[in-house]
Length: 113
Length: 112
Image (cartoon, rainbow over all chains, first blue to last red; front, side, top):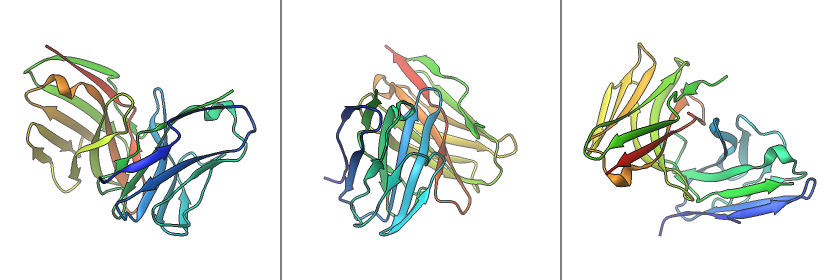
């Protein structure tokens, strides 16, 4: 089954404790991206990747890191999480770019205390 | 600075009637427009899209209209069904850029 898999689904952590949210897709997609969803703000892009070893900032990259060492994986790293990073996170992928149909993961609800 | 706005946070429609969801944008450089649907505890799923060179695109019960002069996008669902109850996001792409800009979302509730 074609899918984007994110883990974990729920995560509660404390300020400053490094964490990684994993994302994997099995569709051989070139493009992958991370979004965060906050009430009243919709979905905002954090980082995106056009291909292996090619990543770029989205609209809200501060406090986040990503890597794309393999085509299928695009982890999101929070080196020192802060409470303002409490949010619902989505990973997405598409064949070549964001104008194509994006496939989203089921989301990761992160709470930073 | 919200470039894409969905001014109605929620909308309630009777089953069988037409649902109209609206989206306004400010950037003339947007060249592609999409609608996504999101159920609770799931990621958004693609619904329908339209290029800036068109003014209408239809797919079954779903039709998207683009009014470039008014910078306005709308999604029509006819007839509305209970399974259409979800949050709907409009999204736009800046020409030449590799990102989508999303609206805030509208929660649609279809009443039996």
